[in-house]
Length: 390
Figure 1 (cartoon, one colour):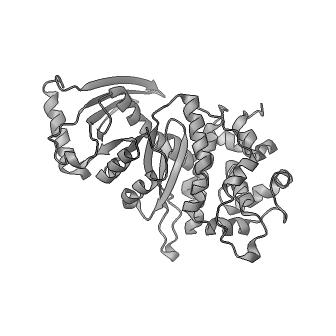
Figure 2 (cartoon, helix red, strand yellow; figure 1 turned 120 degrees about the horizontal axis):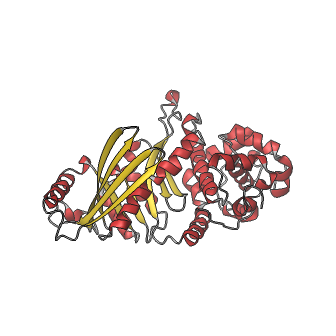
Figure 3 (tube, one colour; figure 1 turned 45 degrees about the horizontal axis):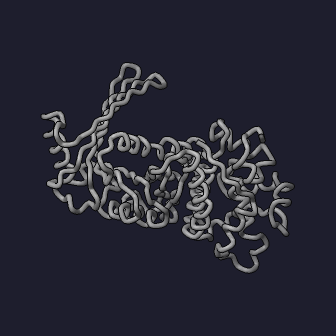
């Protein structure tokens, strides 16, 4: 999937005009909006921190001086470090709202997807800790529009257990109307279900033992229905077989109305269905099986349920995997609290841009092209041409 949004540097610059510049008066040699745009371009081209951003900018000085207001020349690495360390992450991300909204609308039009899956999951930057300052590794929660390849929001949490409080905060900042919110078992909380419904969306929440009696009762209800092969209760089934990369995967999806007799039924706003996803997989003669359980505000439409279950893993396969392998994010040693969070956001933003690019090359090759080709100094060209410049 690729969508085209006509943006040039001037369009992008205006998004950052309202951003509060927290630098002292003696450090205002370089316009803030120009610095941010250079940082975006540099990360697109493969930069992984302030030093790499400055080196890329110096190598592209000729084109940058024509594109941007830079009265004192190309900023040095300390400038990038100071600026991105002083910007408040929430305010920084807020500047991208209109841009991401435009990208999302274009992607929806290009794909015809009316009900996108918004997958929510956390990721830890394993080497971003600083023991001397008692600073733990950065753990961030992202909202990923699976069908569009877009990260819509990110929030940092002190640790993984704090995802529960972070998720409702982020959902309130994006348009979730008509979307299907998917979360793993840690995020299966009544408050998150309510937030999804209040925003005009639906939820599909994984269940494990952390839901106590609800989880056990749902399994008991499902097991009871297996005795009659789910007849007479409005259950639906969908089977798929996939053969790829030397692996055979058989998936069975079952969805049925949620019994109102389930313990705690009334705590889950809009609860309509419960579902099961079975996976049987064989590779190199080794057989594995997996069973997952879900609660949802979706009506019993098993193909829709199956699509949402599969789409949730896009945040792992198409987002987190790229951040680890292509961006090498786990190896980042940026330790300043705001700086590491702002660079994590730039990684996710630029990955989203690369996913929208119509070229068929890999994300890694697209990043190389951004560094090789001076035409990529213009994000207008980046968003609207192939890697060959056509």
